[in-house]
Image 1 (tube, rainbow, N blue to C red):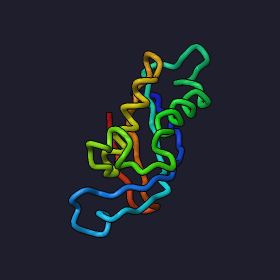
Image 2: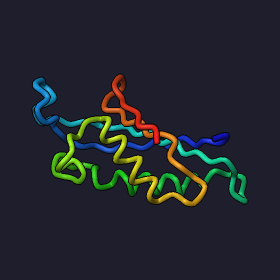
Image 3: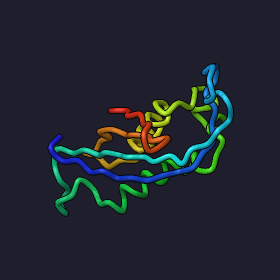
Image 4: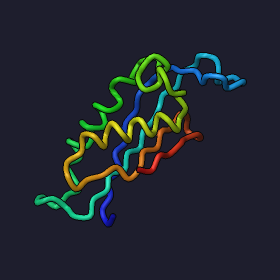
Length: 122
């Protein structure tokens, strides 16, 4: 795709990794940072992939259920381990369901710390 936007946001949440056999199996929290990349082949009539305000709103709606939550109790993490990889994918899927025609999720990177992240490429 020739055009790409980058939108960043954040949320705070607690989780534990089921059957991890290490420190992260215990309850702990993160201030998550999210990088959302949206892509399009063509620009809209205003010369944009999409309006940044709208893209931020969509990302905000996607992460709102996770903010200040215990992720292990929030779908889909009530059934799926709330790993960084699964969090990135869940956000990508939630955003994709809200996008206008012609815009797609290129990737979502979920940062659990300044040095640790996972990326899901759609």
